[in-house]
Length: 422
Ligand code: 5AD
Image (cartoon, helix red, strand yellow):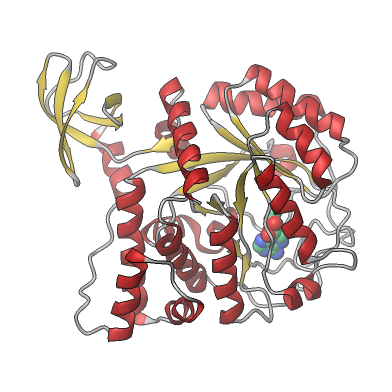
């Protein structure tokens, strides 16, 4: 489930080979690929060659994972250079974060380049691939930005049965090789705790996979049961750390304290936490975004953050889009602060930027992808916003998903590290 940078075989001797890529030379074990020859291209995980690939595909992957150009720091302001240096040694202050979020031109490019360097230093050239199954688009809430809001009478609602959900997960894990799946829905009380427990239990019986739930506020008891059934993580955004903005975008009865209470007990229950905010909500200031960065750093084992996209059938339908550049700066600053955590390029970002945007996000410090595995017939109806992006997943799935146990262990280790360090 992680795509890694290709290497070329330079020398073969018995069960080992010398390989080379942009990062230099390395000796690895090739016993899994006995027919490998000099000049072949391969993918390897740690010290093991995993797969032979064609030169053409190697070139394509290298293009996607290519290094950013190093930016010459000469000529950039002293303040900027001091902040970048400080970020190597300590957490940044809110003022420093604001400075970085306001950078333009060469300083902005230098910020991206530094974030990319940190990504490579801490997580190497791995791009992790996760899958998401959106199992119900019913929602009892009325968040003003979201197309699934109860007040939106224009979307066709669907619910997947327990059977369908288990089947979709089984295909994703056992046919395609996904090792981390997010099960997401609107806040939909139709699914009782018992049904959710059944879904998780049945998936865990069939699949060696990490299950993340993304089902909103359901109280501590429910999350305890799901954890006991085998859920590993939650994807639960606090959406915005500004109480004023939270109040303006959420209906009565919802409040920010309750979201943080959820995050608190989720953490206590031992969940791996993926959280973050929306970037570019109408009325959001740079100060608010700096607070979001600090809040995400405090709570997230993995970041979940994306641009606001106006959805026509919502109260914010005529507002301006969240903004790609600000989103990239948010990714980059977070990378300077959280160093080894996963920062996915989320679908909302790809919807605004397309495939090229994916690459720009990696070069600004992002390091994972979230692919949509919702069955086709439902997918189009999960309209959080319009024109959701799906593209080029085959290439990533072909090379990014290893069915080997080694690959599962890699995520397990990484998740362990991410939970300890944060
Ligand atoms: N644009 C971008 N993201 C949105 N979400 C909801 N509505 C929108 C929108 N219009 C995000 C929320 C939620 C996640 C599932 O989708 O942040 O947590």
